[in-house]
Image (cartoon, chains in turn blue, yellow):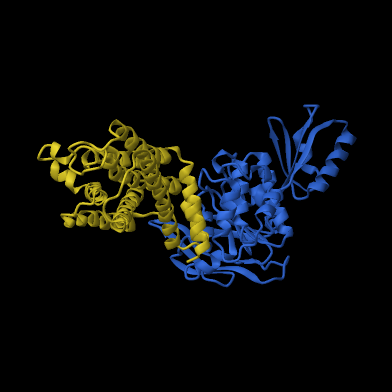
Length: 317
Length: 249
């Protein structure tokens, strides 16, 4: 795998993985993976369930020991210098749970006491995460979204230099998911390095400065979301209905930039190398030939298409 | 070891145990009720009782102490351990800088505090309503209590390490706890049971604890100190099983 140089930031490497491998019996969970995360960026690992995301992130956190390969996080080896590393990172596990009967405020105080130098930021965290009125609620009484916010607050009690967020929004309703995204944006402005995993392409595309696509334990692509999509040279789609059913589909093959026409049950799809050109010419054609277009919409390729192209499979949960 | 983290963990786990109705009932309310209800049947010194000047509550006090220890260690430790493991609490604690030893010590300390509370409640009720007395050495009493606590905590954590889910843990602890109530000389003398059952009774960890606590409370010379070896055996067994089978997730 070649890693494209990342030009968005010019800062120091904060996480470095080289030829990382981890197996469980016959299953190779992580297979010879190398990549770097730069200071201040939001780095995302995206891939289907079982692709190796959690194994990879937990090796960097020091929870799992790699079979072979090298990890440096903040210049430390998670296996040998785990205690020192844990002082300086914040972790949101895939499923975080804390003592069911503990109150939110108590949990913040408890977790803060585990760190050498934790700032006294409980009130501030409650405020940032909009948990003020839940400060005295027991953890088990909270909804999934609120639990996830508490888990993030706990990951922030030591004002970490890197924040690891494993499956940040899995299982959350759309509203809670959007709140999480806003939170990540807030943390980005505070200059924290964030390492996240997700199996939602949309989420990776929206949040991450750089995305590594992982499948069967290997990183199969790594770049900014925009570059990943552009390098795909995938086609955009222009979809529409025509009210006059007699219009022959063949005439659309001549519309600018169109490479292929497909007639589907509820309309016509034009595959195009340039959505703008096709759109303009299509409208002009309709105008000239007096037929009416309806439900006109365009779709650009997304990270989902990147995954599809690279693996030949749809990414499903 | 971070003392602040250790203390916060122990104190917070102690408070969480207080929020657990099953824990409070079995290790505080039940032993106190047991001593008080039976103690109230005969609150005056029992005529002809072999230990002069002691009443029934005083007879029940050492058993009550044993009950506090067993209930707290057998209900609190395995169920907390399995619940925390199943829910991922242990794993979450593991990504903090807290050392494993601190974590283990913190959990143990929280159970200690809880047991001390349960025993204090027994003593306070006993003192106020039944004028219970300790005729033997307080140092021996405290030493014996601490030895009992450690032994049963090791057994409790062994169960919590071997058993997977908290539901199973609840069943397994009942299997150990309930027979011990009857077979450990708490209120039914072992000599009542058939011959084949008696060695089993004597091999249970609560039996020597109960017998020695009673002897100390009555102020009679301790005999058969080799029986402490039975407790020590259980302690070693519990520790080995815990170290061998403990899992974070």
